[in-house]
Length: 403
Ligand SMILES: [Zn+2]
Ligand SMILES: [Zn+2]
Image (cartoon, rainbow, N blue to C red):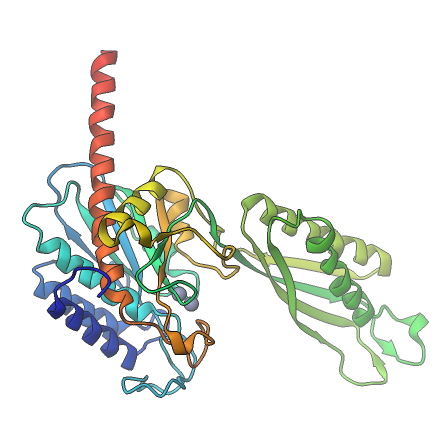
């Protein structure tokens, strides 16, 4: 076993994870999941609060009144029909834990058990956040609006990752996940007879020009060492082959790892829409729906995350990223907009399923990630608290010297 965790705790985590796996629930519908987690935490003597309809928060008191350290797991599943053939595969047709959030929830319960069994209270209070609706990119924000970051000085979390060996923790400064914005372009031209194009404003031609022009934003305007994506996934127009379309709607997604690149992509799409509108005398409206911000680890809490991994799992298990940051989104980024912290990858490579990525109907993880993840979460909560408590002492001493 990777982390030195009592076999009975490992068994409990596996049992819990498999139960959640068998009964997956979609974002904002995690009622059974929440009830199950509450009963697990109450068994440990923890009091739970439910700031939203689903999801929960529980608090472990600390030895000082330093700011709270939050550790977070997401708990929702995806609208995917499971095809793993596992004995504990989903009982719910069309719904599957295909991103590993079942494992995240089980690890956080495991971390709670480790923290509660410590002989002394942790240096600072610890808040366990079991967050709903990560897959919609809205859960973190809703939890923040409900006050879960009140009094929090640092936050940590992690995601299982099949690209890294089980038991390793990848904690790095810099971008980890991309921003995920959506956009919709509505083109309004002039419909007419396909044989009399000069009497029309062709929305298909204007739309096609937009599709081609946006390809040059990433390839010709953005520094190639700063990954970004603009994709148009949908182009709707026209009613008949002999009618020139008067309207068209295009929609797509924008991804970037840095706030400045994200802003550049927004500006360029807008500029292209405006120019094509002028060129074709079409009315073109652009709506950008802002999603999660880029997830960027920075500051001293990254070092705290690495130190905790080294303490909990051994220095050889602390890794840096061998692949670039993930262009997928992760709504943990909302927390990092508010408080310092670090989001890590938790290696969970299963030799024979390496070909199936997250969000696939055959996605699987190595369950030996559970003790490793739990050990890291518990340790980072303690180390983070120590950092915050020491910071407070430093602040007091500085204030004392000043007076
Ligand atoms: Zn996911
Ligand atoms: Zn996920």
